[in-house]
Image 1: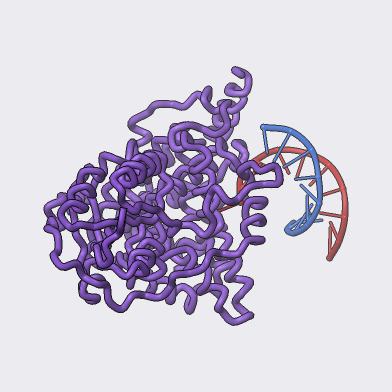
Image 2: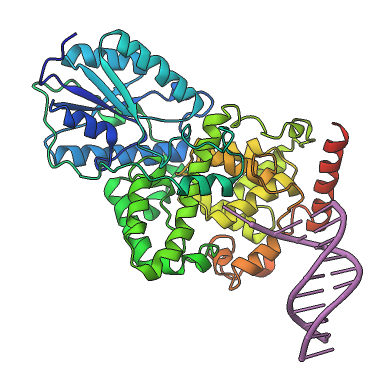
Length: 457
DNA sequence: AACTGTTTATA
DNA sequence: ATAAACAGT
């Protein structure tokens, strides 16, 4: 078939809500044709993991931001309702587009939908192609010496560091060529994407979703926090971490942009920069593992954990969700999560360990709650994190590594500032509720549960 | 990316 | 008396 020059290309935005360093958009623009930016709301195509409440809050705002950036460049975002196949098909028919470009996603349900859709579009004679816009290293490309995927982080990251990061398409387009006629677009509120208002009332004080918010956050981190990162990153009371996770999840900034910004730093900050990039490395590792273990969101990677004697206790689960465990650091974390849609990583490890080991509740209950409440909810990261804490993952903490919430608080929140901010009403220290389980007892019970799991093998 | 109980080293 | 080192979980 022949490609009419000037026929529009659809750029299908998903989790790449940015205009700079966007390979799909760059490809469309390089074709010299007009560009129709598209977003399709199709949560039912994401299997067991459609966007949770906090994610929908973020997404709604990020799309407003993306549309504003597009309008500033003579373009606009066309919004449609799924199913994606029908929505894209109609857009192609209405606009005469001859190409559809997108940046790849790696969630199992989405990846298989995209593969089928890609074949379908090509069968129609269209140019249809996905690009890598969301990870530094394609999950397929990194292999150990036997040609197998990695299962241990340090070896994985060492292999990554010997490779060059792919070239950037970092130039932000100044204008996007508009099609002769704009297809019809839904207004964002018509998608009914927003969660109930009381669910996310505190989020707006904390976050600025969108591409410009992402770059502001990166700049602030590099200027104000990076030099202290190695020592402050574990202190939840401080702003010692980048807080880029939701921006990275929605692709408002790419890991490549972060990578290059760190490598441009003066020499005295490079060591801290590499400590930070190592965390980007964990994100890469999470995508590597998800790509190679499609069942991992709902199944322990270590098969012996299938026999683990999890307890079903709705009351204890609710107390954990609401931050009423009687352990101030755990409660502070769970309340920070509900109020802001985010929790400091050190505290995530502590609250997750508490659910899985002190309460003996299945890590998937915790993963589900995080999925609904985190603005950075990301299937790859969430799965790796929970399997790591539970001890059932590929390169996980051994199961017997049980956090002591009081010791963790003393070590990482020594002034009690974080706990006071989130868990304690002023002057109520004396009235703090008692622990719902005693640490020593819970620890011994968790170790006994592990022993019984091994015995059953 | 731990914790605990015990032993050993140092002041 | 206290800290560092170690083993087992």
